[in-house]
Image 1 (cartoon, rainbow, N blue to C red):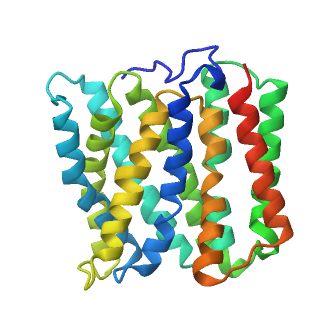
Image 2: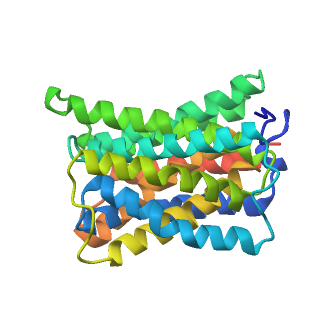
Length: 296
């Protein structure tokens, strides 16, 4: 299994192509619509994750083959990396969707996005380096912004312990998925990497949903089709593309775009109004993104 870093050692976010930075922002905007589609779906939470993957898979396969890529010639270690990445992503989706039902939405967002800190830390460990002053400031601003976005609704409650632990597990698994996919992206294009890891996620999610006794087949397909296109094809497609060109710090901080967009959706659709702390949190996240993008 190759361990070459997705971004060369010593590279900074300013060295990455501008389109990769745009891609990671658009990816997180698209992914932020996922919880809304899950709420609209009339299947179980893990079953909705299964359909997100399954409906997207044929389109991803067709797109990968259309680029001229063929699965022949892949190293055995690369197959193993993508298979483990797919299983990790399936477990991430399953645990996070279950955790949402057992804790507050704020808690689920906070613990489910723990990759915000885990993935950048992995990047510094992999390159055996310490963050610069600007990078440290950006990470600190992003952390404060994330805390403010949680608002006063964040709370620790014994009744939510099970859901909190499931969402925390989801965040760790999501970081593991990022690490594995970054390694795969060092030797193969984004579409084939995403396609193969997506295919590896189908069976585990179906087994999880069946074991939980969830309703699998929906009555209405609109929300699930939207979930597959927005989250898996567009969102994850752009995210995996960006993983090959941006540092873990930029990718980690960019994940905070998701709660910003989710809060906006809640404001527009469910009249969940944003308070002053939320707006300050949005501003801090924006400043952090500008800092890591401009640093040389």
